[in-house]
Length: 356
Image 1 (cartoon, rainbow, N blue to C red):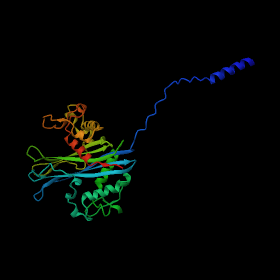
Image 2 (image 1 turned 120 degrees about the vertical axis):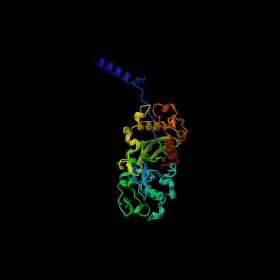
Image 3 (image 1 turned 90 degrees about the horizontal axis):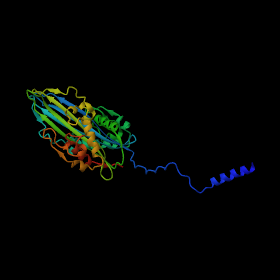
Image 4 (image 1 turned 90 degrees about the vertical axis):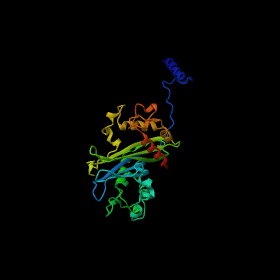
């Protein structure tokens, strides 16, 4: 028995002291380098208000569209950057249903783009123009949470509703801020995580379609405000973009009476309308507007803004579709006119600022 135990112990020692390495059953997974992250979210949103009035013997009728759009860059719920602007465009018409203004529908700068020419200074109790007051509101918002900014105390005055009621703004921003706060909330709701953000910019372009009323057809003033945000990496390439269009129209008859819209409070953008926009039936590729703009947004990733501006396009020759993408990647996903979207991206890139 002792001899047997001795042999067993010796065998165990030999096995335990073997210099031959064990053969692994699996190759260990290679450790991946950590992905660089900015921890930021970027979003853009808008709100549109419409003011309409019938024409009278004393005053032209009008359809005015105020599309306020905002971009936010968030770190958690805290605002690191915000940009707010308003595209305000007005069409006027007589009691005969003839358009009287604007004289040049191709000139459509935003309030921020008008700068000192906007004309608010003379009516300002604090002696500040619109662009100065919106800059003060933007600066106030940075470093605060979205909830804190949106819940800002406001008061109604004789001239304005929703005027900021906080000490920091009493000498710098005394205009109505209701739509600006709403646009910030929409932008925050739309915000998505984006990696490698170095710069962010917002831009827009507005086209106006106007027509006199006839016995067969109502006259109209239609405003198409396309706005975009671009996030750029350190190399100037697009890492995120979102594009949308606020399309709103006022219609009137040959006596200068407004016939549409019946409800001026319902003003969703094309993207917000989704499948209800109604482009599907006319699409040769069977895709709705929101699907086609998503394809364009995806195509832009990894490219410079200039590459998007220089994208080859063509004219379908049907009188409605110019600047249609002429690149293989979009031939089955985006066949609509993209001229204004290219311009909005260019404007956003021109306005891009460093995010610190």
